[in-house]
Length: 509
Image (cartoon, rainbow, N blue to C red; front, side):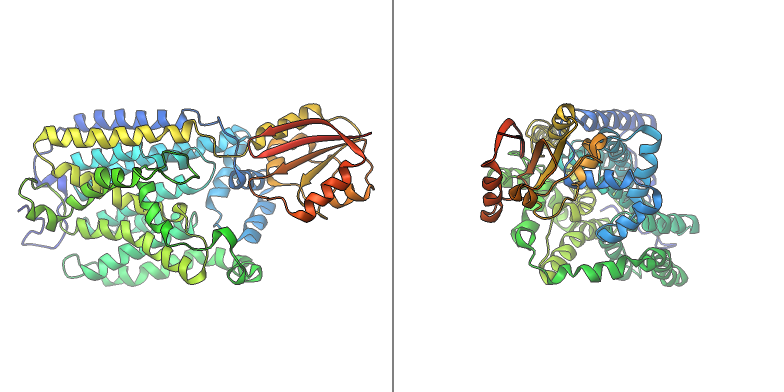
């Protein structure tokens, strides 16, 4: 069996030195460039065909404010740390304000994740496994989906890969520059997503379990959590903690966002590109066994103990301990988020565990690499790639976002002096929803009226544009009664439907 521990020290052997690569460095580069080009094409294709969804609109709304107001808004929201918002804030000032620009930023991060996946795989496994992992990430349904949304998940995934890369280098070479770069990318990813901390916990467990095989300087081990805590201190003392406590979300009824044990299971089907019926609808039953066969079985074959027991598998070059590290990187995010969601009865979403896909796809790639002869390996990999590529039709052609852009533009083009806006079903309030700041910016200062005032007949408008977001606000009997009272004295001058949004123009009889 291939051994990666020499007699002189306990470093992980670097795979590119351990044996003969299947192609030279130039060949690896050519294949990698081809995969990266394909990944970019998949992330740019139809990137702007759907309107920005609620969370995307929230990010853009904050990015349009002054820097100080944006930070204050992030603190009040409490849900995410500020780094992606800060990057987006600068990005839209350089390249323009629109949902397209915000998505191009995510596409850039998504594209860069592909060569980074290769580098991690080459260091931890071998060049061929690294290329296979990069190819699987390039066509991954979940990765493409997040690369086409103006949110932080593509950026956080890239930073996680960077942190893991320098973590592996630190274990292999024990160079201070690698440790410092690991700390840098760890801080950046923590400032992008709180849930990325699960990756650091996986790395910490690996260091503890394999402390005799890969001894790191004690001062590094002690200093790492201290430095990370000090780096996060400015943000944690900004008021975000007190704002979170004041929200009291844990004590609220989460409604449809409450924890369900089926979601950790279905998130694996996300990793397996199984959302064929649409992004936000239930997966077809056949996608579960198909994904298990095409991805999860190869991931299990990538584990050393299984390979040693199955004689039809060939041994492949990899660093000792890589199997354990990849299992931790795969399982820890899913397990910890599930425990947190269960204990607080809050939502478990694949967005929070997407970082586990890095370890998972690397294990899948190692499993494919262990298949032999080459014909078996090629056919199995081709089947997995074709399956993932086929699932992308759900990203490109099945609409799963409300058409906020279409509804807003329709109203803006037909709005005239004396008109009012009513965003349903906001009752007594006249707050402008986030999507209007993005798609209806020219009418942000237009007269607003609440639905309650409409029923009372006390509004200074000749016509009223009523915009109702049915995707997030279900009609209730009380609100239906308000509309009925208002409709008694008004006629419908125009009525349009934009996916989950209704636009109705009322005018006096």
